[in-house]
Image (cartoon, rainbow, N blue to C red; front, side, top):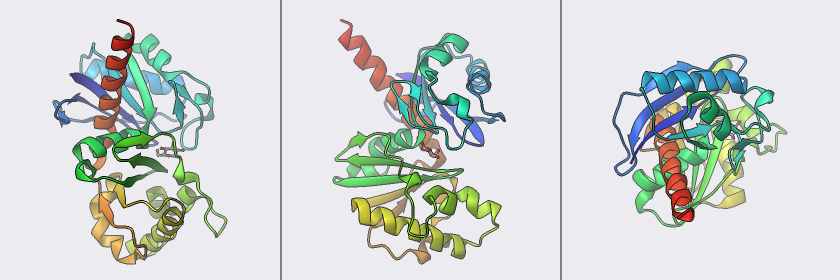
Length: 254
Ligand code: BGC
């Protein structure tokens, strides 16, 4: 099935058409800057612009940077607070006329890595962390996602929220060297390691490309690898989620 995968982020809203069978992108990725303030209506207008860009009429899978339950946004750490309580599946349908399925952005990336990435041949407990404007998490046990884990909001023993201490946005805002930022990330990884003891940690987000530049700072025992699908994991995973939901709904209505 072909699905328009959309990844709503704190700084960009990225989209591409995905072949869910192979995980391949059938188009170039198109990025539009996230509107400020990032109200639901403003985000929906950008999604509409993406739909028009791809002349899309099929189903949409959308990764969203917040807790999402049954299409409803529950939190808003890096987007406008007015998103809380909005049903984005409904809003996207009203704005674009396309059926949409919405999932937490890190969970989307986790699904994609578990299906097509390096996690595909690994059993056990895999923790994917997306490091960007915020920190997102996806916990996958033997290929099954435990959704909405929100480990980016853990409080570290220095009293700071993990994503306010170690997100990539903190590195750029504070102009930290890879060495200094790597130490911060390690402090965070130590905390997650102690709490969930994953078999592998996969780092996603654009910064995972530079893993070698800061992995020397890591003191944890858990192996840390870079996401194979890089910053496309969110788009691909959102499409996989939509395909899954769409076919489940179709089956249950027969
Ligand atoms: C949000 C998560 C999201 C992550 C990455 C966090 O601030 O709470 O839901 O997955 O940012 O976008």
